[in-house]
Length: 330
Image (tube, rainbow, N blue to C red; front, side, top):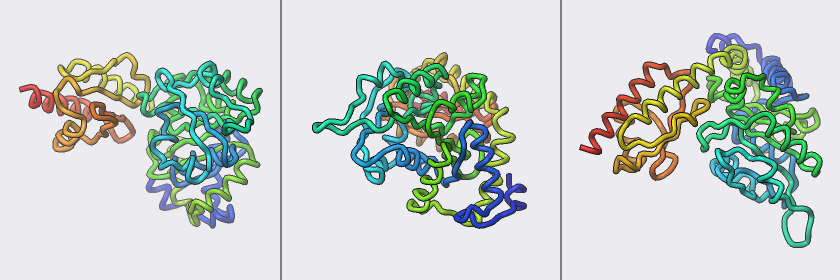
């Protein structure tokens, strides 16, 4: 990636004159089965744009209760897009039409109408769970019949594709817009893509500029993204295997609770309440032992496997967890 960045041919992307960015966007559109794509600095910006091109101020967006777009993007749905979230708690974070249809609101003098349905695949806070293709197809078919667009936060959609053993475009084809990250599982240093119709991406380009995302010689960043898309996807199965190994190991540590069989992709969320220690102190003690992770609740911790984490390092992380638990229970 660094060699590609150093040798990247560049231009001014605000004028769509950067050839490397243009190649990246064309590749992203092809992989997701969309007409066009737009390179943006972050996934949060991508989701903000995805919501904006599909809605009008004063509408509601139906999303899963633990979704990233609601909980981890600084209320941009409301602050920038002028939309209200209507949340649906879904088992394993997987929204189905049966769960969503009862929350759809038509135009009325009493409430905000539904403007968009948002789904997350894989679902971060549900532990990297994958929405099956047939669920997405039903959701989009029913939503479109009701006159509603669907946006997919596909930050880790390449993980979903690796798990299901299908091309990414088979997952993303039914949705109106999709965002995916280059800087997570795919291993690039920065960047995300928003994909949709030509018309939607023309609007998206203007919104990106308003948000301060109009980059100039961005080809030095896009070059790494091209490498990520061309080379990293075949390696994602290794990340998933490492995550399952971590989950099985954690399940064997006294005081830690996790259902290892439910781990599908590269996210492992486990409960440390049985250790008598909260997640915050647990994370700090792991950091002291060279293991970096996140607390996602008072008793929950999240591990994520990725391009820069080997099986040996996962084993070392398990050893660190055992040390912390021994200290807590002794």
